[in-house]
Image 1 (cartoon, one colour):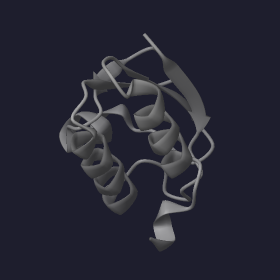
Image 2 (image 1 turned 60 degrees about the vertical axis):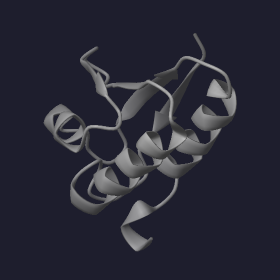
Image 3 (image 1 turned 120 degrees about the vertical axis):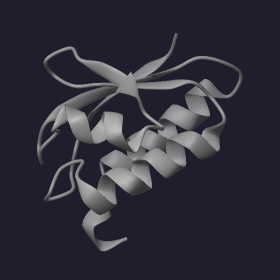
Length: 89
């Protein structure tokens, strides 16, 4: 199963708007995507409540994992999103 490890660039981490944008993109991929924080806790990346519950702050490293056809492309896109400044999108 492919994965990507990314440092979260948004100044507020994965909270509020950045988390919402990330979850929408994960859901839009149509693939089962898992987001795992540095402590090893994993949630469904399309679940806003799950992502918010991880409490990921700016500069923290997360891992995203996907399974299925097109997983690499979806992960590349999501990794790019997390590594960008989502505060201004």
